[in-house]
Image (cartoon, rainbow, N blue to C red):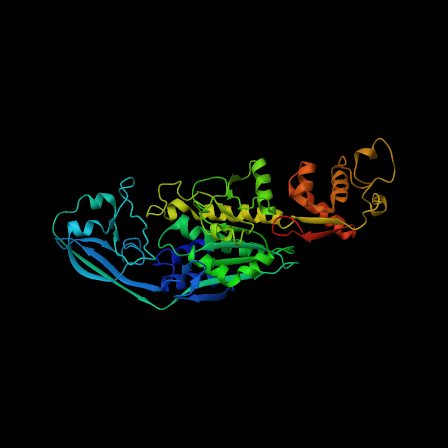
Length: 442
C-alpha cells in the first residue's frame, strides 16, 4: 500500500490541475489506472442548479519578469505561481499596476499562496511575501499563455457491489495543483479503501467511490445522479485532508445528524477513537452540496489534519513532507475498520418473534441448569454469558424498529462485538438483516 500511494503521489503532485483542463483529466486517469471508473461529463455552459459550468482552461506557461530581467514567478517552477483560471496576458506594467494582481501571505512570508478566479475574468501571480516586499519600482513583464475553450467538467465513479443495492458513498476531489494534504490525501486514501474493501469476503452494502473537481464537480455529479443517489445512498463521507500530524480522524456530521454513519461516529467519539464536529454550511468541502436542503443526504466528511487549522493550508507549505505517506496508510487502516463496523449497521428483524427462541437445541444456551452453567452462554461456550446476553438482547430488540447501533448501545459494547453474534443468528435463520435507509430507518 505504501509503495503504491507513494508512487502515485510523485506522479500526481507536479501536474497543474484546475476544475477543467488537461491537468484534471490526466490526474483522474492516473487514479483510474487502479479503479475501473465510469466517466461522465457536463459540457461548458450547462446550467447546473444555480451554477453554470465554466469553459475549459489550459495554461501552458506563465512568467513574471522584474525590471532587471530577474524571474519573480514562473509556472514551470511552481504550479501555484499563477492565479488559477487567469486570462491570457502579454503586457508590461508598472509596480503600481502590478500590485493589484499580486497575492502573498504576510503571516507565512516564505509560502506561495493558492488563489483561484474561476467565475470572473482576472489574472494574477502568487509569490512569497518576502519576495513581494523586495520588489523595486520599474517595468514588469507579464506573460500568461492561457486559453479558454468549450469543454466539460468530468466526474468518475466505480461501484463495489454488495448484498444490497443500498450504497455507502465515498467521494473525494482532485483539482488543487501541487498541494498534498488538502488535495492528494483524499483521492489516495479513497484508492486505498477501494483496494481494501475489494478484498472483503462479504459486503452487506454496496460501496460507491466518486472523484471529481471540488464544488462544481460534486454539483455536476448530483446533477447527473442526484435522484439515484437520494434513493440508494444509506450513508457516505467526503474524504479530505487525511494526512498530516494529527493522531485521530475527525468526522463532520451530516446535516440530518441521525443517520447510521453519524451514530457510529458518535459511538467512536464516546470510545475516544474519533473526534466529531457538528455540521456547518459555512466551511468544508462537498458535503455542503450533498447536505443542501434539496438533497439533505446522510453524507458527512472525514479529515485528519483539518483544513484551515495548519499553516500550510492553501499554500506551498502543504507538501509531501507535511502530509506523510505513512499518515495516509494509517488513515486507510482506520477507515477500513470504521467501514467494517458501518457495514454491520442495519435493522434487525426477529424471524421467530413469538416468545423466547429455544436456544438450547441450537447450542446457544446451557442445557443443564446449574450454578456453573448460569454463568455461561452454552454447553460448549464458557464465557460468563457474554455471548448469550448479546443474543437475548438482539432477539428481543430485533423488532424492525431498532438498528444494531441501538442494540450495541444497550449492550454497552462496540458494534464490532455484535457482528459475530448477528452472523451466528443469521446462520440459524433466527434474524434477518435489513439494510438501513438514509436516516437510519427502513
